[in-house]
Image: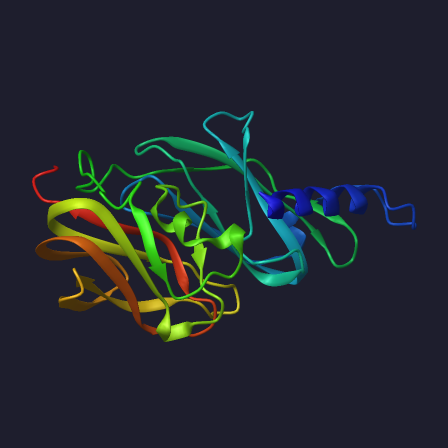
Length: 258
């Protein structure tokens, strides 16, 4: 939330700074070097927008199911400093649905840029309908570290990919332990990595350890089949690009929940 507030404040200052910068809103294509590209998750519930700009800028995306939009997502960087490689997570989506969006930002030149109204369609849910992620609403009992309260471990089990857990520079040593509250027969697990626009903080493989006993993996990030029964599940980053590693969401999918 604070990132959105900071962004809005910056945009307001840019539009009327009184320092001779024209108030005209320019076309975002003037600074778009690559993209915007939309990559939808197979679940159809979130998508990642990536764009590279020719100048450093702070960016956000307004989106929604109608041309009136109504939702706002901000760049995943941990601050308001401008940069050129942008990644924005659009969360809370429905599968097989058309979404409209507009990309906007303020450059280091003090000008405001805005794209035309664009659209994309989410795919049909791939095997996820009816699945129960029992990690959502579970209890975090241990975590390697948290970058701040805004990036707490609880964000990785809230069912919302627009929030995220970030460690404080743990790299390959980052881990998260959740208590499911009951013994669960599990058919698969998942780890959806966070990342920074400079390429750091991206988890490549992870492992899971059940009830402080058997370890499974390593698995590539995303969803992986792993059958076991247990209550306490530990997710470990096995390999990564280093830095503030963490997760948008972790998953523990109960057997027979499809």
